[in-house]
Amino acid sequence: MSNGDIFVGEVIGTAILILFGAGVCAAVTLRYSKARASGWVVIAFGWGFGVLAGAYTAAPLSGGHLNPAVTIGIAVDTGKWDKVWVYLLGQIVGAMLGAVLAYLVYLAQFQANVREEGTTEGTADEPVATLGIFSTIPEIRNPVANLITEIIATMSLVLPILAFGLTKGLGESGTTVLIVSLLVVGIGLSLGGPTGYAINPARDLGPRIVHTFLPIPNKGASDWGYSWIPVVGPLIGGALAGLVYNVAF
Image (cartoon, rainbow, N blue to C red; front, top):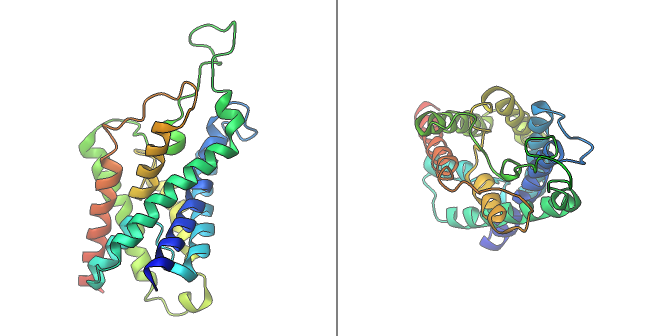
């Protein structure tokens, strides 16, 4: 794979991933969305389908990593680091692009994110905080616990992805991406409660950058004080998964 193919594939694939993922979060969160308040199960499946669409699209060009933690895990296992920077750059750019596209899809809903005239403080018409549409927010802010959650959840993603390569027939049948998509749904349902399961540094960092600059009314802060956890945690988890896979398999 050439550097150009890898970059283009990761940009397109990660953009699709974030379009679906941020899109489902917007659908569930924003006022005047037909899917408002439809719940965590909808969000988990929305992200899973985002992985399905993005990875299948990117696979012919780049292999469809879409996630720096996956790229790092593979590099730790194989010892091949020369193209890692291309993957990471494409993933960050793609994540930012996907966040902008999700914003444009829900532009009218974002523009309606204002207190309606005549309402009072604390009513149902309070502006909706929007950071959770783009990036993760922990339910309990505890840096150590949050970091541990992200490390374990990311290992639970990357280690099976590496092991799937040993399962005869998955690659040939083209069902590996489908299985990974279901794995992401499972992680969201089982391990996503504490932090919102970033498990992907690009997925959190790219949209957080976009949230900082988008002209969203009453959008709230972008919470840069927390932002290192969904980056560092998944990178550690991906590296540990690569080490475990290299030793055990």
